[in-house]
Image: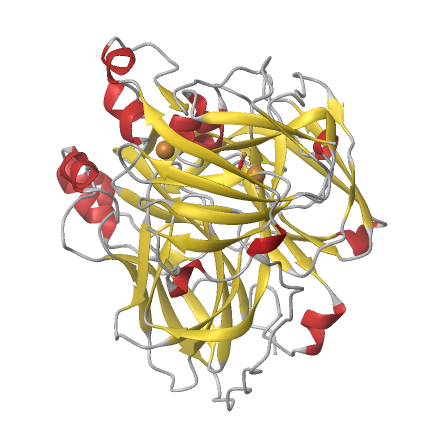
Length: 482
Ligand code: C2O
Ligand code: CU
Ligand code: CU
């Protein structure tokens, strides 16, 4: 069954809005106008001879009718297409840059060698094209790609340089999970943005450096106040926290349960029934939601789930829930397919296989911060230095990484690996720490079990906080694998 994505809301257009005076009245008028959720274009590498073109470009985006914002996108004005790749294939991506400034494109979650990873060393100058051939060798998963130009990452991503990448394989297809893209397999890139009278604003200043760029408006796939029609059956949502710094705590307005089926590294071993889900910047999750009863439901988020200090300072603070996407089930009821009890089976790593422990503490230099200089964030007290390799790791080694945070909550991300969480705060991890991960929330100290399967000799991999302003301001280190 194909649903058309034509908006039936177009009739109730926004002619009245512009007549109101003042930002508050203007915002109120605009805030209540839902628009149909945009679905990023799907590019399946197999339909394009395993060769995809991405062009990073400036553009203009109307988040609100009649208000044009200056934005960045891949092949469009904001965000990029969803790239679908198949396990076993080699996919060439030609990334060209017409931004007028340097950029890079990092494949977040893809297990590929360091020289293909698109980190801060892999600069694509304005006017240049980078053509990595990506070997897809990992299980089905929801990944993403985004700018990683050091010092410019936060602003470039905020302006729109991010997109999804879906890896699929035969095992996943055999499970019969919902997989009609944009119909019952729906990508949701969750972001928050700041608008001034409907125009995208880029917050600056010390508070922004301190707790990251946060905005007063949620944007999903570039849509403000989105509304999505879904078929009356079980639907898969592929969630990406693509915000610079905002933490989401997601649940449905009617309290309905859903099944969490995949973490960053792909399918969980078995589905987990949940009523709420936390998603830190950089994290992904796939969930199955049953809409067969035909009742509308709104995916909502609670307040920024961060430290008390951050909550106090956050512009998005408060106990109120905010709507993320309103879902309206349509059409005839279809009895929901059973969710398989077993989704995947991973070869289990044992902690006893680890040959080394390393400790990482995410640190902040308050004096440096107050002086407004960059480099006020670090790991183990050292700020990022592109000329310094912080860790040297043996190819194939298994290690335990202990990660803690001196202040605030930081989502810790490691390139080129998927890991599991061994412990949180000295105890067994939380249910939401399950699965293969590449990004994990660090409030309490965690122990991660990591196997290094990808070489990084000519160019190093990164590990960093995924609050992009912290990363840009030095909370990042690099490692070689050989
Ligand atoms: Cu999603 Cu190093 O980044
Ligand atoms: Cu990454
Ligand atoms: Cu951080």
